[in-house]
Amino acid sequence: MKIQFLGASGTVTGSRYLLSHGETKILLDCGLFQGFKNLRLKNRDPFPVDLEKLDAVILTHAHIDHSGYVPLLVKNGYRGPIYTTPPTVDLCEIMLPDSGFLQEEEARFANLRGFSKHHPALPLYTMSDAKESLKYFKAVPWGAVTQVSKGGLGTFEFQFFPAGHLLGAASVRVKTEGGSIIFSGDLGRSNDPMVRDPEIPNAADELVVESTYGNRKHPDRDPQEELREIITRTIQRKGIVLIPSFAVGRAQLILYYVHRLKEAGQIPRDLPVYLNSPMAAEANKAFAAHMDELKISEAELNSLWKSVRVVGTPEESKALNARTEPAVIIAASGMATGGRVLHHLKSIAPDPKNTILFVGFQAGGTRGDLMVRGAEQVKIHGQYWPIRAELVNLETFSAHADADGILKWISALKRKPKRVIVTHGEPEAADALRHRIEEELGLRALVPEHGQEFHLH
Image (cartoon, rainbow, N blue to C red):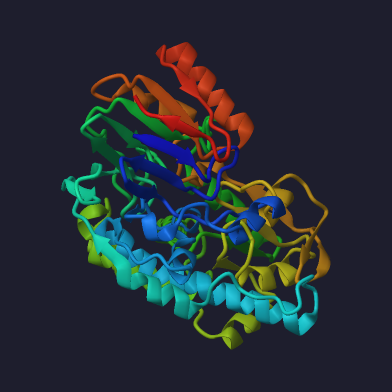
């Protein structure tokens, strides 16, 4: 069995791992590159594998850096199965068409305003392309053993195990007659109040583990209390709290905490809370359909959604930009790379009475990353906008396990892997985690380069 790293190596985005055994080839994760321009350009590179020879795609979860390249893969000729968990199928039915729509909108806006270097600007894929790709998705139950084979010329077996992090997110154990390997996927935190905790897969010979927070430890603070403090001081300034958020998972978690603060009387019960993401509203249906995977009850979920005003139309979204009274606005995207949050930033960022609150990891090169690093202005739609609002980055809201959490998860594996391959992290984070794995766990560890290929033991 061989593995080639086609993404998420040297960066925290674009997860794509090619596994080969005999004549059989499978792609584990199929994500878009995000962040720095040199990474985003990789999305337009020819795919380095003959798609007619690719036998299956396996997705760990629905986030775009793990699933967002699927529509382009199908657009370019892939016709094989795309295996993932039942909740991830439901979420991809929401997220992938939305990704296509956003790309169409950004291309249309760039052509209208003339700020693209490409004439005309074109999307990677459209909403129609994304919907077409959904025909190839196949749901696989948790723990079920599924085979992928090319006429007996190399057979893979794989199983999904809960990874926490997001509804439906999985770790994957892949096995051949010659050995086995576990892919952690994105590991969640054991104290997430909504999504169930990561589980420990069966033993494997090798391990590929993420390292998003490989050089950090999450602050030991109550995220609900931190959120209360931020909202309270912004209200006292008569300002607006704008929260760029991933529409699926993070938005629901924020709404959960805001709802609890209102119920406890710790923030005004009549404080308007707007969810400006039709996709996040649609995601509620997926959460409601998989209550057995959540820690909260259906009654709590329904109560949460009754306390928020969902912004549906573009006209309603534009009207929010004229608002001057205190409010909480949650809008995608979480790294401020696109979506409706960009229009809100143009009206909210220049005013010092407002607050911009980031609640998740910001990949290098994104607007979110620039802002949390202290940029005084950011470029949006071809124009620079000043950042005068208070800016806060709360890592207590992260959906990823920190370095200690990752090490604890590795230590709990039923048998020590012969080698640990550290991926899905910025270079400093990946190397820091590699070092701790070697020093504290006594395991051989390495960080692969983009395009590098290994034989698995």
